[in-house]
Image 1 (tube, rainbow, N blue to C red):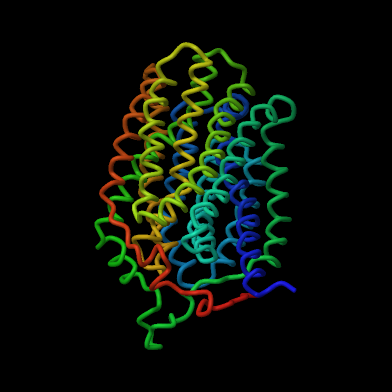
Image 2: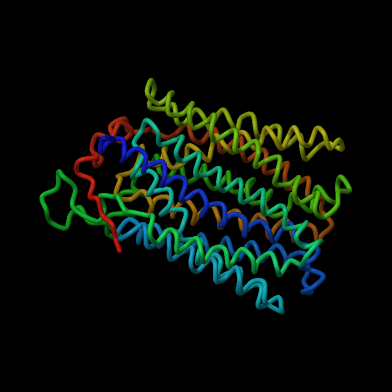
Length: 429
């Protein structure tokens, strides 16, 4: 007969699996449109800068609303935030396949930013609720591998556009998302202490999440500001690659539309998948000996990944470019498996989703500006390799900024956080 602890541990990993698929769908849609660039532009007339603006507006809306999405997930129910986000995502994805003008496509991408702003802060916070320090990085990393799977599948958008139509791809995945939202309605359970006073509280409203308390707890802490700086610098590279790498590979190495889209996502996502598994396991073990262990993993990753990204943008040999993408992808995996666990080391458990929402707010505005700048530079006949070289330098600076963070060992080890006994077993709906 299984003990309650074993059942609880099993469900904690089931949560990772359920949310893995949501992360996959989210990123599939984000990157599918970039790999369908030529097909979309042949159907709907727009300039290069306008095409870049489609991703930029998504990022700006997504970033602007991420703190609100995180705050609602901290204050109320993570489950319903996640399901609502997926439902809206599905409807907007379906709608994207039916628009007839640039203005319609622009509006659809902005609405997509609304839907996705509510998922990542709530999803990562839910995983952190179920996984304490010993498994937190690995669980986060496995969830983030869903992001890579979605990004890799997004690269197949070029093949979908070539053999079917870009509109059909969006229609198919919109319908699939509706069915999966129904599955999550029955499978997800909330488990976080912010919906009720903690075991050590006096029972008044002082433990409840409020806007003023969240802002003070986050922006009054130098370590959070250092993490915010890191995330913004990382976004310069990450979103520049997401938005323009398929175009760069196609033009620089004379690849076909499908091959360029798949190459731009496949190599990086594969290496990132390996990176989150290695980095997650490494981080969970290193932090047991040194509370700064979680910081050192992404520092090492990007001190290697930055120079190799620069190499990718500087070579005329596609084989060397592949090596550059692989090493950069490995470093990105080290980063993605560590960000939420690092956040858990430096902020109160009540503000995890809100904190991640603010990271998204600033980083996506920076990333969106980078994508738009790439389009504007192309219109000015500036080679995209310069964009990637600049991004590579930013990655190394980002890595070094992490060393300014001072983690809290008590939060890492669970002292001062809700334990398995006092966490409410809340099944909303």
